[in-house]
Image (cartoon, rainbow, N blue to C red; front, side, top):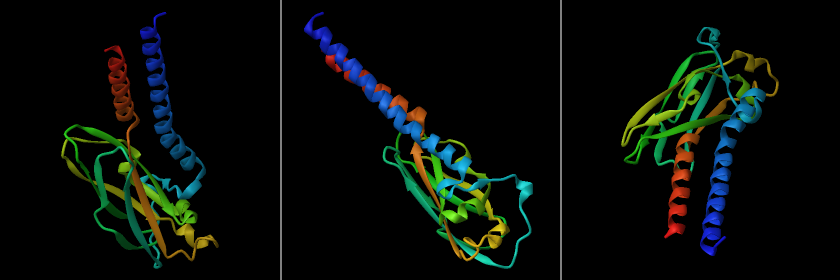
Length: 196
């Protein structure tokens, strides 16, 4: 095997390892999300059917909305309103706004949590943009809804009934599919560079 062939083979192996590591890094987000949804770990909210919403009670609670974008996703993402005051059990809708800052379609996936963590099991989502991947076209801006309520059972939980403020936080990540395409293109370009 010639020196040039060894260099090329080493470059391809290194590129393959880099793509595999990148793929595993982005796969960790949905795997962690699944773990949190199953266990309620880390303030993960509960997903419920629309018909499950209970009667509202007189106690009010303040909801704060937070938005973040992970590195590698060229979007702006923010809550349309930063807070709301609702009665426990009352159905409410909030909107987040996202804009694709690139000249290419980009797909993202939102992860979410609630703080304090003890409130996560009582924050019930009926509909949410975070249930599915979101694709934004070049320069597109969209308002994305989340429909929710706070389960009145929170008032029966000694560790949660005194909570008077909850923060709902989302972080958008590049979708695994978009990330893998970018990584594959990088490896191909690197391999082509070793041929010349």
